[in-house]
Figure 1: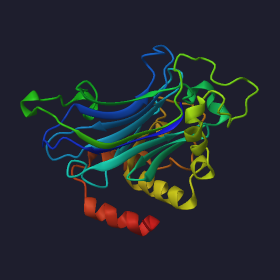
Figure 2: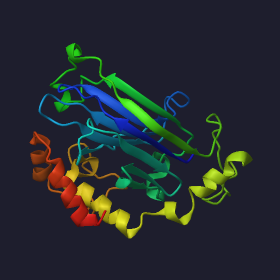
Figure 3: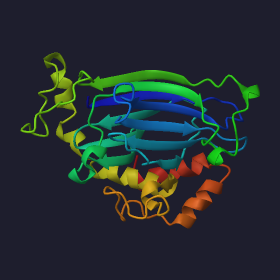
Length: 270
């Protein structure tokens, strides 16, 4: 059920990794194929001279289409970096090296679109030639294989639950009820509802704002073609980067990791 999922990952080091998708995610599609929940980190390979990109996505009750894409402020092929998902009743937070990059608030307006069923943790490397790099323009070239990703420091902490139980909480239960948790694991569920996990603090919000302002180049909340009427959770304040800026970032060929690191330290104090 609700939990904290984390892994340190080092990406494949090939100069050409177009079409490759490296994924670290949670899902229950095996148990709920027509109404699954999913929380995705998807890392998208690229052609020679262009950096990996990062995509997050959220599915609730089978409804997805909530992609956001980011440039990295470091080289993910050079060393291990930590990728984490915090998921509880109140919000879902994606983090990179402890820095929040995305927060989804579990408000009532989302209804069943907010993930609410038990999920398992997965790690995969697969061929996404039909979409992963420039919308499928560049395919996987297997002469560069094998594409090896290294994982360590895997963590999965939360409340163990039976994914086949449809009614996890009664209608009369309070939002923080842990009645659906088996008693040996209840302390993990309670820990995820401690004050420090219910909302981001001011420093975390500042760090997330910096990442989104300087490294996010696509958000479904900006996509008026796909969503002429924005989805309920979208706001005009957090995702207000002009489309022209996002297009320039999509065309940018080489990242300046050193410059980005300095800018982040100036912006957030980390």
